[in-house]
Length: 217
Image 1 (cartoon, rainbow, N blue to C red):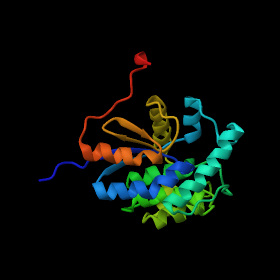
Image 2 (tube, rainbow, N blue to C red):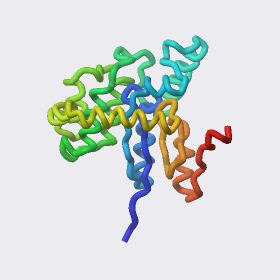
Image 3 (cartoon, helix red, strand yellow):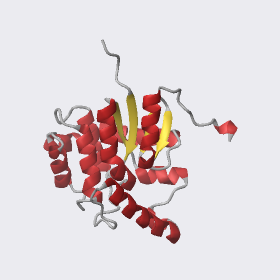
């Protein structure tokens, strides 16, 4: 009898550029390594604020320019569609996140959470859709195999607002400062360009390398 699947915690936001850039690669890793994923959508701007980060337009102009350069590099390397200046960015992803949490809780039937997560990311960064629009979100959920109308209705439940807020508080408490963040056995990996390191940790079986305590800093 096989044991439980290895689990990765995945913190992301529908408006996270780098979550989108690494999304398909991450999903491929999940399939190849037969992983369980605990999806954790977060309020990325709140995480930025808690960690001293800034929204794109508030960053130094040098960093804004370099970000665009990196977007072009990764677009070519990952061979994905990517719009440098999306029409609906930034947007408020909170309704979509609550619908995602409702899907995770089983409110919309047995769809594909990985597909829904990717579709939400791609909507912003490739398809230039408005993830604040309920009808857009219903369509994305249905493309992921869920009952989009059921998820839209469920998203108004206080429990999902509380869950979303709790995940953001959890992310801040775990010292996240951006997205995506992946955790494996408590070891954090920040950014889609660390996916090779995440896979190496999974396949090697080595003990996790944990962040230092605050007293050690």
